[in-house]
Image: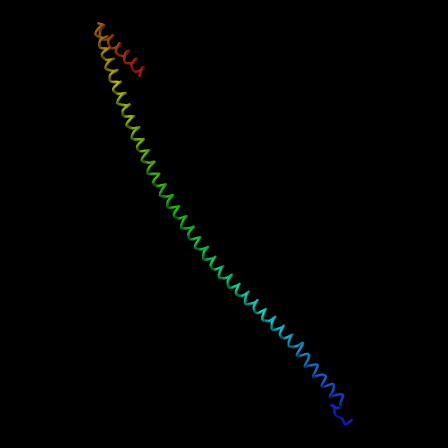
Length: 165
Protein backbone atom coordinates (compact mmCIF):
# COMPACT_ATOMS: atom_id res chain seq x y z
CA UNK A 1 0.00 0.00 0.00
CA UNK A 2 1.41 3.10 -1.11
CA UNK A 3 -1.21 5.33 0.52
CA UNK A 4 -3.25 6.26 -2.45
CA UNK A 5 -6.94 5.86 -2.52
CA UNK A 6 -7.22 4.68 -6.04
CA UNK A 7 -5.51 1.47 -6.89
CA UNK A 8 -5.72 0.37 -10.48
CA UNK A 9 -5.38 -3.27 -11.18
CA UNK A 10 -7.00 -5.63 -13.65
CA UNK A 11 -10.13 -6.15 -11.62
CA UNK A 12 -10.67 -2.45 -11.24
CA UNK A 13 -10.38 -1.92 -14.94
CA UNK A 14 -12.78 -4.80 -15.56
CA UNK A 15 -15.25 -3.37 -13.03
CA UNK A 16 -14.91 0.07 -14.58
CA UNK A 17 -15.54 -1.33 -18.04
CA UNK A 18 -18.51 -3.34 -16.74
CA UNK A 19 -19.86 -0.15 -15.17
CA UNK A 20 -19.55 1.78 -18.44
CA UNK A 21 -21.12 -1.04 -20.45
CA UNK A 22 -23.96 -1.20 -17.90
CA UNK A 23 -24.34 2.60 -18.16
CA UNK A 24 -24.41 2.39 -21.94
CA UNK A 25 -27.16 -0.27 -21.91
CA UNK A 26 -29.12 1.57 -19.19
CA UNK A 27 -28.96 4.80 -21.14
CA UNK A 28 -29.75 3.10 -24.43
CA UNK A 29 -32.56 0.79 -23.27
CA UNK A 30 -33.96 2.43 -20.15
CA UNK A 31 -33.08 6.08 -19.82
CA UNK A 32 -33.82 7.19 -23.42
CA UNK A 33 -37.14 5.27 -23.65
CA UNK A 34 -38.03 6.60 -20.20
CA UNK A 35 -37.22 10.17 -21.34
CA UNK A 36 -39.23 9.57 -24.52
CA UNK A 37 -42.21 8.38 -22.43
CA UNK A 38 -41.81 11.36 -20.10
CA UNK A 39 -41.55 13.75 -23.07
CA UNK A 40 -44.55 12.12 -24.72
CA UNK A 41 -46.55 12.38 -21.48
CA UNK A 42 -45.45 16.00 -21.03
CA UNK A 43 -46.60 16.76 -24.57
CA UNK A 44 -49.95 15.03 -23.91
CA UNK A 45 -50.37 17.07 -20.72
CA UNK A 46 -49.53 20.28 -22.60
CA UNK A 47 -52.07 19.32 -25.28
CA UNK A 48 -54.68 18.61 -22.62
CA UNK A 49 -53.95 21.96 -20.97
CA UNK A 50 -54.21 23.66 -24.36
CA UNK A 51 -57.50 21.89 -25.07
CA UNK A 52 -58.80 22.82 -21.62
CA UNK A 53 -57.68 26.42 -22.12
CA UNK A 54 -59.32 26.50 -25.56
CA UNK A 55 -62.51 25.00 -24.10
CA UNK A 56 -62.40 27.56 -21.28
CA UNK A 57 -61.97 30.39 -23.78
CA UNK A 58 -64.78 29.01 -25.90
CA UNK A 59 -66.98 28.69 -22.80
CA UNK A 60 -66.18 32.30 -21.85
CA UNK A 61 -67.03 33.42 -25.38
CA UNK A 62 -70.30 31.47 -25.28
CA UNK A 63 -71.03 32.91 -21.84
CA UNK A 64 -70.49 36.46 -23.13
CA UNK A 65 -72.59 35.72 -26.20
CA UNK A 66 -75.38 34.30 -24.00
CA UNK A 67 -75.13 37.34 -21.72
CA UNK A 68 -75.45 39.69 -24.70
CA UNK A 69 -78.37 37.69 -26.10
CA UNK A 70 -80.04 37.73 -22.67
CA UNK A 71 -79.63 41.50 -22.46
CA UNK A 72 -81.07 41.89 -25.96
CA UNK A 73 -83.96 39.60 -25.05
CA UNK A 74 -84.61 41.60 -21.87
CA UNK A 75 -84.56 44.81 -23.91
CA UNK A 76 -87.02 43.33 -26.42
CA UNK A 77 -89.27 42.12 -23.59
CA UNK A 78 -89.15 45.54 -21.93
CA UNK A 79 -89.93 47.23 -25.25
CA UNK A 80 -92.82 44.84 -25.87
CA UNK A 81 -94.08 45.51 -22.33
CA UNK A 82 -93.87 49.28 -22.82
CA UNK A 83 -95.59 49.00 -26.23
CA UNK A 84 -98.35 46.90 -24.69
CA UNK A 85 -98.72 49.43 -21.88
CA UNK A 86 -99.01 52.26 -24.41
CA UNK A 87 -101.58 50.30 -26.45
CA UNK A 88 -103.59 49.55 -23.31
CA UNK A 89 -103.53 53.22 -22.30
CA UNK A 90 -104.61 54.27 -25.80
CA UNK A 91 -107.38 51.66 -25.77
CA UNK A 92 -108.51 52.85 -22.34
CA UNK A 93 -108.61 56.45 -23.57
CA UNK A 94 -110.55 55.48 -26.71
CA UNK A 95 -112.98 53.40 -24.68
CA UNK A 96 -113.45 56.21 -22.14
CA UNK A 97 -114.22 58.63 -24.97
CA UNK A 98 -116.56 56.13 -26.61
CA UNK A 99 -118.35 55.32 -23.36
CA UNK A 100 -118.57 58.99 -22.45
CA UNK A 101 -120.07 59.83 -25.85
CA UNK A 102 -122.53 56.93 -25.46
CA UNK A 103 -123.47 58.15 -22.00
CA UNK A 104 -123.91 61.69 -23.28
CA UNK A 105 -126.02 60.39 -26.18
CA UNK A 106 -128.16 58.32 -23.80
CA UNK A 107 -128.49 61.27 -21.43
CA UNK A 108 -129.50 63.55 -24.31
CA UNK A 109 -132.03 60.98 -25.52
CA UNK A 110 -133.37 60.55 -21.99
CA UNK A 111 -133.64 64.32 -21.54
CA UNK A 112 -135.47 64.57 -24.87
CA UNK A 113 -137.85 61.77 -23.86
CA UNK A 114 -138.40 63.40 -20.47
CA UNK A 115 -139.07 66.74 -22.15
CA UNK A 116 -141.49 65.10 -24.60
CA UNK A 117 -143.29 63.36 -21.73
CA UNK A 118 -143.40 66.63 -19.77
CA UNK A 119 -144.87 68.43 -22.80
CA UNK A 120 -147.42 65.61 -23.27
CA UNK A 121 -148.29 65.73 -19.57
CA UNK A 122 -148.68 69.51 -19.72
CA UNK A 123 -150.87 69.20 -22.81
CA UNK A 124 -152.95 66.48 -21.14
CA UNK A 125 -153.20 68.57 -17.99
CA UNK A 126 -154.23 71.63 -19.99
CA UNK A 127 -156.87 69.71 -21.87
CA UNK A 128 -158.11 68.18 -18.61
CA UNK A 129 -158.13 71.59 -16.90
CA UNK A 130 -159.97 73.09 -19.86
CA UNK A 131 -162.42 70.22 -19.88
CA UNK A 132 -162.94 70.61 -16.15
CA UNK A 133 -163.22 74.37 -16.41
CA UNK A 134 -165.82 73.99 -19.14
CA UNK A 135 -167.61 71.33 -17.09
CA UNK A 136 -167.52 73.57 -14.03
CA UNK A 137 -168.71 76.54 -15.98
CA UNK A 138 -171.54 74.53 -17.46
CA UNK A 139 -172.52 73.21 -14.04
CA UNK A 140 -172.35 76.70 -12.60
CA UNK A 141 -174.44 77.99 -15.40
CA UNK A 142 -176.87 75.12 -15.04
CA UNK A 143 -177.26 75.73 -11.39
CA UNK A 144 -178.64 78.99 -10.58
CA UNK A 145 -177.06 79.42 -7.25
CA UNK A 146 -176.14 82.31 -5.23
CA UNK A 147 -172.59 83.58 -4.98
CA UNK A 148 -171.75 81.67 -1.81
CA UNK A 149 -172.91 78.34 -3.08
CA UNK A 150 -171.00 78.95 -6.32
CA UNK A 151 -167.79 79.47 -4.40
CA UNK A 152 -168.34 76.38 -2.29
CA UNK A 153 -169.11 74.37 -5.38
CA UNK A 154 -165.94 75.66 -7.12
CA UNK A 155 -163.77 74.91 -4.07
CA UNK A 156 -165.21 71.43 -3.83
CA UNK A 157 -164.59 70.75 -7.50
CA UNK A 158 -161.00 72.14 -7.32
CA UNK A 159 -160.15 70.00 -4.29
CA UNK A 160 -161.52 66.95 -6.10
CA UNK A 161 -159.35 67.81 -9.13
CA UNK A 162 -156.30 68.15 -6.86
CA UNK A 163 -157.01 64.78 -5.28
CA UNK A 164 -157.26 63.14 -8.69
CA UNK A 165 -153.90 64.49 -9.81
